[in-house]
Image (cartoon, rainbow, N blue to C red; front, top):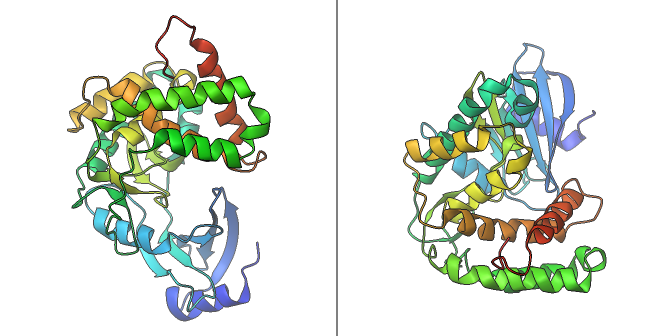
Length: 313
């Protein structure tokens, strides 16, 4: 792909002075960002991150510095959070060789699944060792906003159902059922309110790079905040049934071995916390990458619960 003039000028003047970009390649991006592989004429590889909807450049750059030596992350080379130099917010980091865990789980021998799970669990435990003064969502200096991330699930689900495309794709009975479930979770989530550990908030195989059975980088920190690691446990286990056998058990084992704490009822708590993310996905355009998958997941879980079973996903 061709780089815009202002960004190419920013690279040559500020981010990579003295280096010439010999090749570019579009990488898989997310709903809120776009990623481009840059290869210099000397063979060095970098990733240029452009922010399409949500400017989390300052937060991601600050987290990369904070996590150095604690959690494997891509090294940030240069960042322009306000776009004053590049014309838009951009972040340049070193490319981390490896493969996404999502690919490894589909191509590796089955016996590696447990080891890959343990490595992902241990990396998550390391993330949780980073603490903050209080829970909340980060400003540009990584100061949490004091807004409790575990509170208000039913209202959050209701708002996303009312304003998103799921309103037209879920039946009235399905919407009512989902709201009942969100309300039933709230007393459980109150038990983890006040936690103030680092949460990645999109911790799943597509954002974890591995070499062999070791995690070499955790990517995409744009949604990170301060709360309980059970948000990330729920995210990872959302599609547990689709992983190779023993991966999920390895993940849980690795998380505990790395020092992560799983309180009584952690499976229901983590599933309830993950409903925040699922509701947010349902508010996105119906042709976005994960909308249909999230919708199908919610319907599947609703169908699994009969009237005699607890009113929880």
